[in-house]
Length: 381
Image (tube, one colour):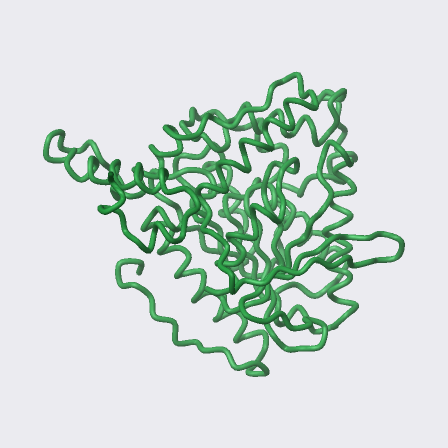
């Protein structure tokens, strides 16, 4: 009944028409509310509708403290269901190839994602984006994330490398970290100048993996990427102990984050028993950002991590690192991934596209023809 009133382009982009319909109804209601109750809407109506839509349509993502196998599978199921509804559909023009890369005796599954044609990244000068997915180190698969990564490939005109790193609790978190470090070693071994055409990106826990990897890169005197984009990153595992804000965020609550951290250290290990030496092997150092590449960080003002992300951004600036923190007003954890539903999300994706091309232009020094004339929506400036 409501489909005639919904944007046809939006219906074509989402797999869940019911979500699109409810989003439009909530947006229309939010446009009327200020006339009835002035000051009731403090952000744009579509972003407010997205926030309400997640509260309405999806249960809060939870993980029982029992941490049974059933609890973990339930969390994975609901996480995939939520993201699948909010991510765009995967167009037929987007190609996804599965590969197994090997470093010494370790094998790491990888997916190459690009529109129209996938070129061998080892023997070309095309720019690359190395993506570490979120999911609290427990969830994340190519079926879910390839939808967003296909969008990235087309928007940024880049080959996306999706790392299918090992997940807890089936594997130890040390093995997860080993996978992301080995992938970076493989890239450098294939092309010693690959960092000049490389951009990193990670969301949520994947952002923390990037922070850890950057500290490892600098400690081991390896070349850094041209830039890294972090969407609502966990600064480290310890930051959860400093959170005192109440959040309405249905994507990442404090209770969920703490239970995910428990899986990282082991079900039978008490957090207060973890030594500094053990923590250094699985968590980024809290104040070690010297030598980092330029960073573009996004975070929603309603998420539990916002204060910790702001504090980390301040420390990064004090380390003389170029960093941008782009906050989504009134929005949730990883809001930038839900660009279809929010003007703030669309704007930040446009700004990231311009930022990425600027960083690649510096690194590749005109070895690759990159169009720097990116038109930005005036409302996003």
